[in-house]
Image (cartoon, rainbow, N blue to C red):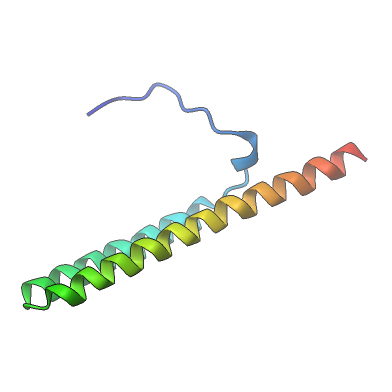
Length: 82
């Protein structure tokens, strides 16, 4: 396991809703468990479809949270400039 001493986070992501991202990851993990059950039950195609759908959904939702943080940062930056 590689250890990281420090992580630089852009200012734009300072207001990122981390709890919402964690909730989405929890939902994804539950779907992974469901897919495992589907696959062990002999329904491999449904399991793969569920995983593909959830991966795309998770990516969109996280991208949206990053975009929202960026917009919030831009709005606060422009109001500070005035």
